[in-house]
Structures are given as structure tokens and as C-alpha cells.
Image (cartoon, rainbow, N blue to C red):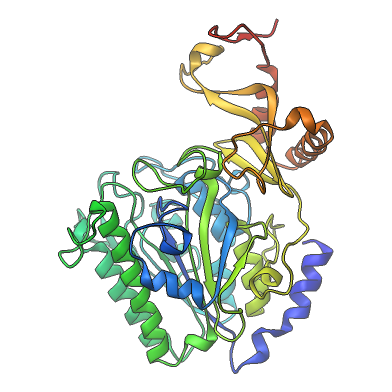
Length: 453
């Protein structure tokens, strides 16, 4: 733990004690929802409840996932650590027997140790065998699908039991919502943590009869509008039980949109380390604590949620150092921005780019195995012939490479990345060196790059 973070947590003692009990936490996470898929972010999809949540709280415009795909992004969110540190560098599949390292502490385990009731309702995707399921990772209860809805088999589980061998997709969002409302009802007299990682809008898409065919924007619109309805139901339940002023609600997505959905005006989609793959919508409301109608341009990400909740709830930080920082000063409006180390963006073990202040430096990217020797014959992570630098304040869609105009910034970020990588597990260090060794020589337009001699 850094000195600043330790001081922050100590000083907190106490937002948590400001009321009769520490705040409840509701964390809603969508699967493959794009930056441009909510009304308050410019979408034409009708999301009145999420728009109201934003008007009553804060909406972030530069909030990031550490990885552009499902499992790694969820591992980072729940641990506050990069996914390459916690054993989840890639998407997990039903055939995998492992999952997120058992030694890692999660938001749920920290809050449970601090007296919280905890539940996970929805898509897990961090290991489907008993030792890796939510009930072994700090959650009192689990209801949902253990991985993505396009993977088979597709069981619906309650705790460790399969209650539906093939989950009926059309009923998932209503059933998740029903479970969330029951949890709020029975936990209302204790501090609680509700983690609701929706199955949708990951494909295949499905909506209940109440919403299917109702959106003018097709099935994708139907699905998002049903998620918005679900959020509204949770907001109403909190108000009904007199909990809305002592509950922090957060809403976001795991990565950018896949085949459908919108990244807004950003470049790239799910699977890309361009902004469209890693910049996410993020809305937070805590009535009376977070100013209403605020828009924050501060740089933050899913790895920041754990250390921030540790401050707000009085929970102890994990024994292992976290990569995220406490972003309460951004949430509360105390500060417009925070100093922080460069954010790294991974795809599998490979770090491909880094964000520091308003700058983003791309230095590697996947390409076909044709370009360089590849034992697997698949994609290869190649260093760019010349690093690309973008000023994301002036150019959020990464259209204008300004590396030639700012060699000092390229050098600064490159040095920061080199230093940071030395502190990562051996597979990251190895992948980083192997990528650099694949340096290619510039070639005439239309010709394939050649490996350096």
C-alpha cells in the first residue's frame, strides 16, 4: 500500500462512521455494453432510470477497464489489481479447471470480513469449479451463469447447485432483478454488498416478453432497456426501504461493445486496446455525499473501485498491493483530477499501450501470424514500427498520432512502462521482451513488414 493510500484509508475512518452503519454498496456491471449505449452518453436507446441515476450522481467520461475482454476485466474489478497479476490474463472457458488465483482477496471478502452481507447475481466468469465460484470468494450467495451465455453448457446455478441445466436467456434479467430485490429486502437491516454482473448485452441477445420488440432500435435496444428497467427496480427498492441515502450505487461495463452496441465516437470495440474497447460508462450515486448532476473528466478505472470502497466502508485493504487508487475525491467532487501512475492496457499477457495524464501511447498490437514466426500459427503481438501517441483530451477517437511532435512524452511514458513491467509476473516480463524482439523494419507501402535481422 502506498503512503498516500494508507493515509487516505486512515483518514476515512470515517466516512463509514458518519452514519449509524457503513454504506451499502450496489455494483451493477453490464457485459459488452458500449460507451455510447446509454442516453446520458449520447445513445438513442431509452434509458430513463440510468439517466436519472446520472442526474442524481456523477457520470465519468474517462473511466477504464484494464483489459478489453470479459474474465480479465472482472478479475481487475474485484481485486483492484491488474488481471495479469491474479492469474486471469485471458477469457476463461468451460473446459478450464482453474480461475482467479485463490490467494487473491476480493471486494466481497473484504466487506464480508467487515460485517457485510454479500451476494453475486449474474455472470461470474472467474472459474466455474467449486473452489473458484463466488461462494468461495467472499460471497454469501450466488445466483447466475458461471461464464458467458454463448458458452456451453449454460447452467443456471444457485450457490454451487445447478438449478437449470440450460438457462432460459429470455428470463435472466427479470430473474436476476427478482433475486436482487429479495436480497435487499432481507439484508436491509445490515450493511450489504450487491454485485449484479448482468449477462447482457453479450450475445446471443434475449429479452423478456415485456421488452422484446418494444425498442425502435431492435433486440439490442430491447435488452439495454430491460437492464435500465432492472436498475430502476433496484433504485425503487432502496428508496422503499429507506436505504437510498446510505447506499452507493455504481453502474458500468466490463469492456467495449462486441458485434452490436456503440462505442460512441471512440475508435475500436471489444478486444481492442483502443478507447472503444477499454473506455466504459461509469455512473455513481450516493445521495447527500456525491453531488447531483456532476460530470467528472478525471481518469479512473475498475481497478480503483476496491481501494475506494475500502476507504468508504472502513474495510482493510488486501495484503497484496493494489494497483488502483482511492477515487473518492473524484466521486465527491473534491478534486477534478488525481495524480496517478500510468495505466497499462493488456491483451492476454501482452501490455500494448499506456495512459498517462492526457496522453496514450500505443507501442504494440496484434496481427496475423504471417508477419512473424508464430509457434501457434495464430495472432502475434508485434511492436509498432513507430509508437503512436494520442492526446485524448483533444483527440479522444485516436485519429491523430502526435508522437513526432512530442518525443519527450513518448520517452517519459516508455520509461514508465519499462519500469512498471519489471514488477509484474514472469509471463508478462517474458511477453514484453519477446514483443520487443519482434521489431520489424519499415517497408514500402503495400508490402508486408519484415522481421528485423
